[in-house]
Image (tube, rainbow, N blue to C red; front, side, top):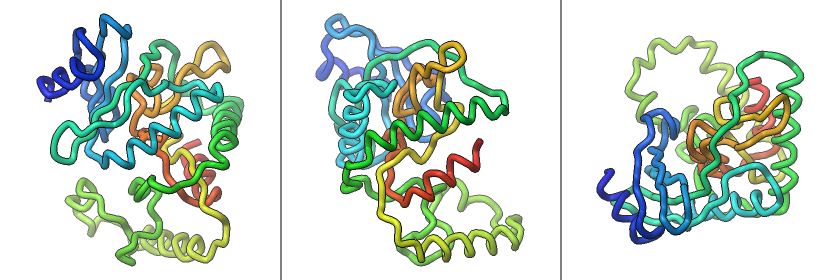
Length: 246
């Protein structure tokens, strides 16, 4: 993959040096690289298995957020196909900041406030083009099954899942299916490991939408808008996901 990514960088960003970051820098759903461009300076390059059209839409929303002053990486290219089923894009490099790991209410409040800021920015943006939500947010798969397809999880021993977990999931799915709330565009992977903070309150980068200032990448979190994972669910799903991890 390194050779393919380097060739793409030379075409899209000009001459420079490509460095692959550690395997966990881009999260579970992408690979992250650093490209030191002679013309553009340092940028983050993200490669992920996904649809070019969907990632392009995520990058559009990420740009809207950055233009509005949201502290996230700014895309510097559109999404491009790198190979069969693989998509590549580049965004501004945002190093620094610290991941908050304490389980305290003030931090949860700051994180919630930042998520609310993003929701306000994206409030009027259509969810068109965002495709299927990530597995952990997909409570109503079109197949009608309880759980959405997830190759990694599906390969595990499903007999080990307690019956009450299936019962709870079915109850939640049935309840959400009766909701009449409008669909919204939001971040479905708003977790502390996807955020970096300066000092006690200033966020320096957001979710693998963003990137170093996320261990290095914006990703699926923005394409999850990328890491944001951008997805379209009722507000209750976004808030429920946030509450689950805070």
